[in-house]
Length: 548
Image (cartoon, rainbow, N blue to C red; front, top):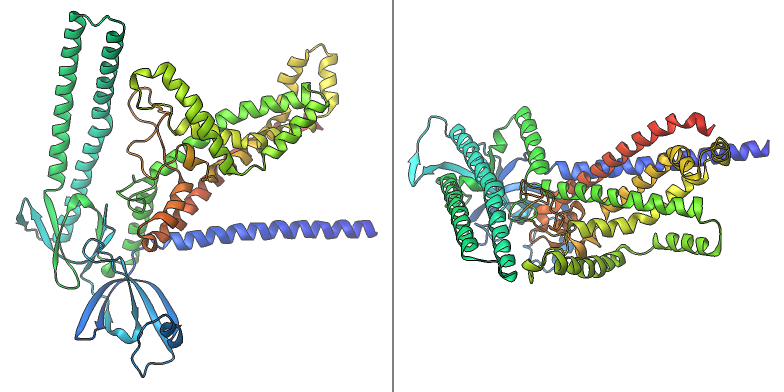
């Protein structure tokens, strides 16, 4: 009776611990979603009339934070306050935007300074590619320096913004595909010339062929460059006139505007559509001039691609090592030492793996590859510099102990009777391993893969040494042969979170994006894990009868 009671208590304790863990995870997701998604919801823009020493001024912006502060707290911070104020005041943090017009994106106001406040319906909000948000009043459009007249100016603005986006998309396609291909062909032509010169085979005929090919490629490149210039110029020919709270007019080219809306005049359905568009732009858009502007698609792409490459490398190595330890190595002193080393490697700080990857993979292996196969490109390194390949190999080394331990644990749970039965029927040890042991150990292998993916996708410190960067001009995959460029640097969601939180010059404005990016990273890790868990469950059910 006592044993049954103890088992019952342990069962409740275990269930309670699982429930607390799930609740903590749900609360984490809710916190990230609340703090991150509210950035994309169109907020009310308020016009404040502020009392100054002489006269009044106006401040236009979104109320980001509202809190109660005491007089003593303000006076302790060194702020001079007039007499007769209450003991508790309200402090407003206003996101004023207009970074290139004003000194800062944010302004702090105390309640006693505010003479009046209103939410004018005519205020327009502009989301820009650089310079952050801009708030003011829409005073018109200029096309090639001439005023543009339309019956519905806001509709004309939206159409012109859409047209500008299409022109920029065409320009980006020319730059990323057509010009990139021509540039690659020019580089190959130059390398061929250099090789022929070294081999003393650069004859007059070869020189003539080279000059003809080079001239034609340069002509095509010049045509594409002119098309790019024309599209860029056409996209910037229309300018929006924005009047700020001080009455000054500012001229903003439409190719710098991502979206424009009247936040104080939108219905809930319009706000919902705008919210969906903002989230989609955040997920699918490319980076702007700084990390906090534009979308995070390059970081998503780099994170997923790195994890996939890491998985392709770590799974065969981990499975082979586990098979050798469990099936062939026996239980001697050397095997025990190897197992101890594997377990200890799992506890090594990740930054140590980054230092090892930089020294061994980048400098030693990459430098050797450059001297053997890319000597023509030296002293500019090809693989002797941090890149996607070295980051994937470093994380594969970091997660290798996890895969080895999980796979060996799965192999140890397979009954010896199955192996003995297979050998008794005439199968060799290799055939038994391939047709009996490994299929039954696949769920354990996938468990190791799940743990490896979860750890690798969230690592940041080692990646800073072996390939991840703040901004990249090109993705590791493009339309230029060999299509997958393992030597290129890449962006990563974990590093982007770090950069937004600690390295951004405008951290206050980018703070909601930290939560949104963290939520995106957790979602990607969860999706990869759910996919692996579903596959593991399917395979486990298939081989359950054999195990029993």
